[in-house]
Amino acid sequence: MHSVATTYKAQTPEWWRSRLLERYRDTVEERRGYWSVYQSRTPLVHIPDRLQQAYQRLLRMSSTPWARLVVDIVAERILMQGVRLDNNPEEALWKIMRQSQVDTIQRQVYRESSAVGTSYVSVWPGDSNPQLRYESALHTVHETKAGDPNQTAAALKVWVDTVAGEVRCNLYLTDAVWRWRADNTNIVQDGSVDSSLWTNATWEAMESYEHNFGMVMVPFVTSPTDRGYGVSDLSGLYAILQRLEYITSNVLLATELGAFRQKWATGLDIPKDENGKPIEPFSVALDRLWTSADPETKFGSFEATDINAYLKAVSDAVGQLSAVSRIPMHYLVQTELANPPSAESLEASELGLITKAKERRELYSDSWEQITALIMAMTDNAMGDRVVEVLWKDPRARSETSVMQAATMMQSLGVPWEFIMEYIGYSPSDIARMESMRATDMFTRLVENSLNPGIQIPGQGEPFQQRQLPVAPNQ
Image (tube, rainbow, N blue to C red; front, side):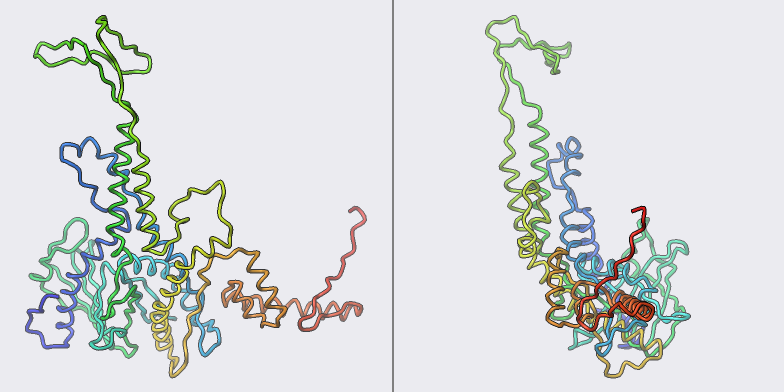
């Protein structure tokens, strides 16, 4: 990281702003690069300049979304569905999160964090309840505390207000938020900030306010380094992804050229035009016949291009991609559609993917616990020594038959009903609704029993014998 050449006093808001602006400058280009790879906007495979124009279409077709597939498959297996305080589901906290569209936010955060290494969520006091906001890592950067990479010392958000024609800058400290704007910066058409922002900008202070909530900008870090900064999932896959695009472009080129078998002829007298340039003697078409009056003329064609070697190379590269990323092969290549594997074999092949998703959940749980503490502080609820637990959806892709069979066995062993519902995959909100419905059903049965004493109400663990309804005469 470049040195901070300012006269600001250390630890002042201006000092932190200059320090984090340099960190942003050093970080954002790498993050944008990985995000471009994720969106399949990588540079085209290099070929000689004289062939660029002729094969531009094939080069664009060779760009395949392998990176998006690798990132999205893992992100789709991670879903928070509630929080628990001191071993009790906390519906009030979850309701506040749902009001901020937490389902949409967490999808954005997991995808971006896996693609570029980091993503952010900010928490703000609202008129009635705290508000959660997704903050893109393409505009935000943070610095960890010295000696404690799990704690955030400061964070900075930089973005372009294209309507006002100015650059905005927000600094987040553990006890305050500071805001600036800069009018005399160069803003390019794509909305990114020119490097002159850090050398020529004159920042004008806007509003600032103090608080006692702690760090309101919470990072979600993937594969943290020893200093607590994230590493993109694509960092170790870039060479394989480039190789896949290169081989795919060769397959398309071979297919394009091999689709028209090249003809040859000997013993022909090639006519020439008035400028001495040879004239093609034949026009190739399905309804055309080549003839020659010279008996010595011979016609022939070259063999078609064999692309099996290219396809084998693609398959090998995809296999390497699967091994390094821990994405099961059946997600990347669908070659056995006529004879699909069994559910048991698919579940066994996803062991690496499930382990990877669980590792991510452990990392992201710390961030959601910080957000939970912020929400409680903003709603005047003392966190104290209360234990927060994030409730996650099971990342395994299980068949309904096996799940229900296992649930039935649990019930026979006397496992509590709520635990069985969690195992099946219901969220705490769904379980609470079912509890209410169960209570309503029990009350209805009690009323029916009072009106019809012959009906027996089942006890705990006893099967309920459903009352046979009378059949209408016309049935």
